[in-house]
Image 1 (cartoon, rainbow, N blue to C red):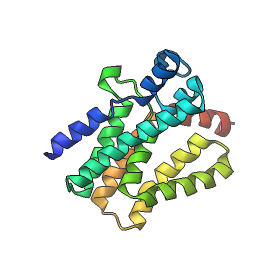
Image 2: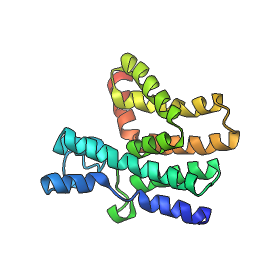
Image 3: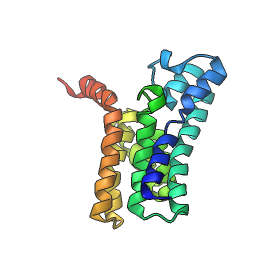
Image 4: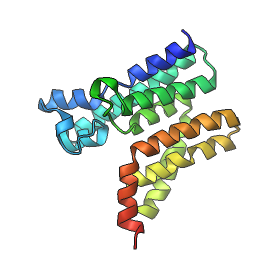
Length: 191
């Protein structure tokens, strides 16, 4: 498989919107018309409860894991694995079959990071926990941790080329969560 074929595969894999199917299965409703209208795990949990959240989170995480593991099995270089993770997250956030209205990519990102290197997930859990104690806002705390992840990788010795692709991935995640960040800013930081 060529690099381009792998990236297309990853983008299309991102289209498998777990939240859509979980909510359909559990409630026979269209998640896009429920709660926030987002197809991700948090809205699935709002609509169906803890069971829906867990199933959606696991399914969306699995997409990221499959993308990275398939690249590892094909013995692609690390920069291609990061591009694969970018592609699957982009496919989740902007899925063609759902008119480019998907989830926010957090679970898919986490699943890919876990497959990429489990120390990434441990770093994110610890940093999210620390910032949650300070901010008392889970989503923003997680986004701070995600934003700091490239620095963690830099201290682990990642190359500047990989750092660039990691920053692109982080910017995509932050863009998808821009409404959350704006709401937090307006609520807590504006005088």
